[in-house]
Length: 215
Image 1 (cartoon, rainbow, N blue to C red):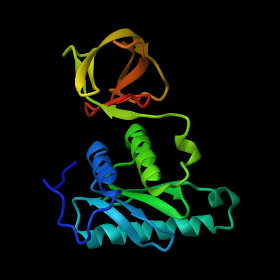
Image 2: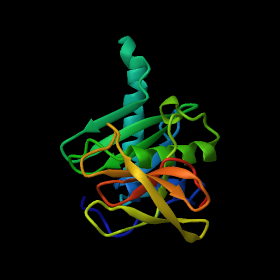
Image 3: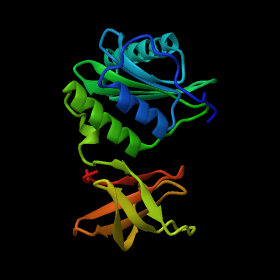
């Protein structure tokens, strides 16, 4: 995805939401991400667009999500996520509770994105804002981690960066799941301290662990 080399100049002091939003933009990757309230006002944002553009996108998608919830069609009233693919960009909106939403502008023609990166970001944002965690994010916990692998095509992990050091891992077997996307690979591993975790390498080379390990 083509994007600018640095974030746009901000027009407001960053809050505790800014860092998780920035990490989400880097992980997906995304052009911009914002937290918006029930009235369509942007609480905070991060990204490579000018602030006015980010806030406009956030307000527009929040309006769409609100209209869906007021729809006469019963199936739309409970919509918690919306993904829109347009000619020049794609957008995603996720309900966070208390009327707040996470709005993300994705790259050109994007229609899917890392659910693990989204899982981590939503958890951080809900903790910061003291929102109730949406139900669809309660079943799994993913954390982005740094992993050293063996350099082969199978990307077999050798160590993971935890507690400010490289911790050696023992591979117990391959992780097989219908949720793995094309060019993703997963392993079940045991750490030096006896903990077990699943490590997944996504197609862009980013690794995620399936539990909140110390880091």
